[in-house]
Image (cartoon, rainbow, N blue to C red; front, side, top):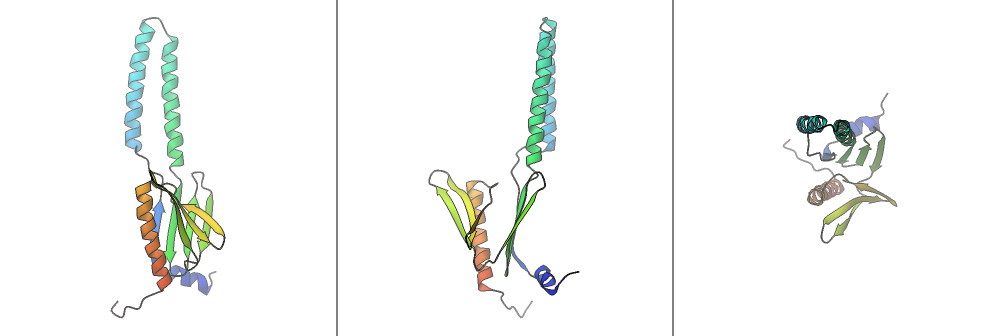
Length: 172
């Protein structure tokens, strides 16, 4: 059963919406190609050592392939994390889902939110924070410095639009 407030929130127009995920430079096809290449090279080199009588080396090459496979799988598991940020005229919602599926959610009034950042003069923007009524959360942790600057600009524009309030357009 839903109340009138929930229906009102669902029908409210989003000013800003972003889905942030960790960057991964290697997709599944690339992973398979790397693993096939590594397996072939390790097998061929292991066979060469086996022919020379150093049979334990073949096992170590197989172990190396297994460790690299495990490291890639762990990397792909952490890529399931995401951060969803949306701004409407009445709320700013941050929803963070960890790679294990744990969900943390914060809701702020956009009129009371302040966006803060830590800047390193050599690196650029290192951290972005949402601050409201004594609460501070770090956002956009997955992004690089240039992406954080672009995200900061877009979120500031959205917060300013939310502070201006809804506009009336008789044409649409």
